[in-house]
Amino acid sequence: MLRAKRHHWKWALAILIASLPAADGAPPGDAPHGDADRTIKPPNGLLLRDWAIAEHGMFTDHGKVLVQENEMHLKEGSPATGIRYKRNVPRREYEIHCEAKRTGGSDFFYGLTFPIGQDYCSLIVGGWGGSAVGLSNLDGLSAIENSTTQYIEFEKNRWYEIRLRVAQGKIIGWIDEKLIFDVAIRGHAFDIWWEQAPMRPLGIATWNTSAALRNFKILKIKPSAED
Image 1 (cartoon, rainbow, N blue to C red):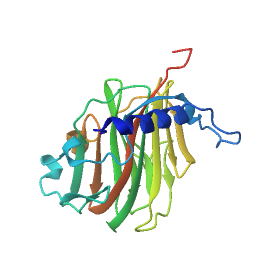
Image 2 (cartoon, one colour):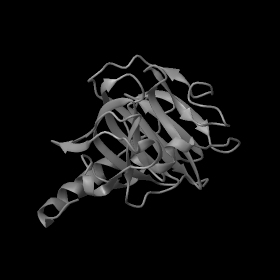
Image 3 (cartoon, rainbow, N blue to C red):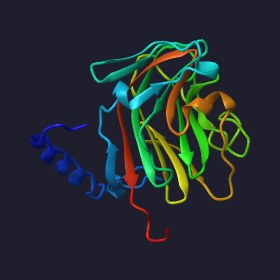
């Protein structure tokens, strides 16, 4: 969070740039970043004071969580390590950006639990042997058995840019600007496993795996004219 007035012009410039239309040639299914209204959490905002370390249920034997040079490191838990965002978060019309990498283990290194109105869902990245990506749960089906399921061979110690949007009646996900899924909210049921309940309303977890995170931010999205 900014503490000195001399930094204010930098954030004003950043917001102005974010409001400019995207260049032609955006990836199919991608909406321009220009529909971002304001940044709720600035980049590199992974400060321990903004997050609570999960300590209940499957997180009782969690690994250490520490911040080093603007990176948050989640050490391997038995079976899980997780952090829950303590500040208020929107429940619709928002987008979450984060870079993540697996530093050890072979299961999911980025399990993002997020709100959809009064419901919740989890984006799983690198689960089920290390390569599965998808939403858990969609219509009662896990990330390896519904229409969002993808498989990516993730490299250890390589940063991946992960983006999730809950806006304009859809849930859309990208990894390194590649569109992974685009799901309408209406007509589907969303829920989470009980193991992820401590991550509500917004949290990031790993499973038998260590990971690092950086450049976390939440963007508030302007509602469309139809909303």
